[in-house]
Length: 405
Ligand code: HGY
Ligand code: MN
Ligand code: MN
Image 1: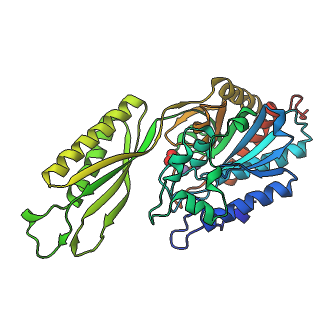
Image 2: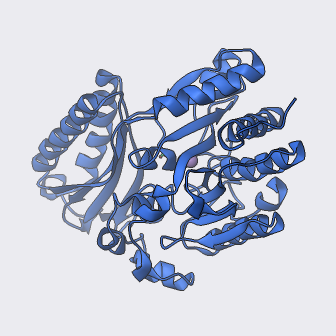
């Protein structure tokens, strides 16, 4: 399964992935998911928001146990962020069938669409629409860097954007959602554990800073006559790092768009995207607030206008304590060890859904902690341990009398 998915959407230069929502690469990933579902005689469906589901048993029976993740990537992302959770879900089912497990609850495997928000800027579009925290109207207004709106992109991929909307009936049938994910940090590497259980997701968001100046000739315009938006942008990037360090938070300007983007022209517009995350809402608000007010000062000093727009935001997530502890109990019983419970700064569909249903996460060791990079890696024996752990968790949750001796 892993080998079949590996080449899909892989960029040649960096070896990273460009699996953006509703693109051809996304379509190939979706075809792979459908193939895996049908190869296991699972009931395959695509929901109104384009999320893919594979069912063992009838979800209408309710109280289903669902596992899965996402297949889309950030620009030049790694192979594991998302796909490891989906591949492990199918592999865990294979493992349970091998054990002769008897399911007493419906089991679902899901691929949530557009988790990274790489194309349209908003994270977790598929799960937010399903949970109702993103309205169809808001989704319809999402536009990519080429001006293509989400509806047009969906239609081009053969999906109906008018079907988008909340799906409370679907969520009401789910008793627990468990997402396995490669750790995006080194906690497990440092503790020497293969598997961890998530406790919380720190609050985080994305803000777009539009610095509007005046296009002019780079070679003839006197410095005093310029309204160069690149200058307040550069000062704001440094302010973000300073404010984050002061607050024990993180802040990154990782994406920039310059118009007209000419070597010999003072830009008219510099658009920069801030990603900031902190241990709590208060810290996050103070970092972003400080960065924004510094940016306004810098912009004014250069005769540049500034607009700041919050494009994506996820409040702190505390995973369901009962489910979290159940996972830790199951995994602890198997290994005789206490499984580490760790927080994360990375957002996930499990976080978005935690407001609607009990959700939990399993992390698989990432020896370097690197993620959102072609260098992202997890060792095969850790990934196999992840499949076994997921199988044990699914068995513990969905099979009343575990088949194991
Ligand atoms: O950005 C994140 O935290 C996640 O990878 N979408
Ligand atoms: Mn990611
Ligand atoms: Mn992810």
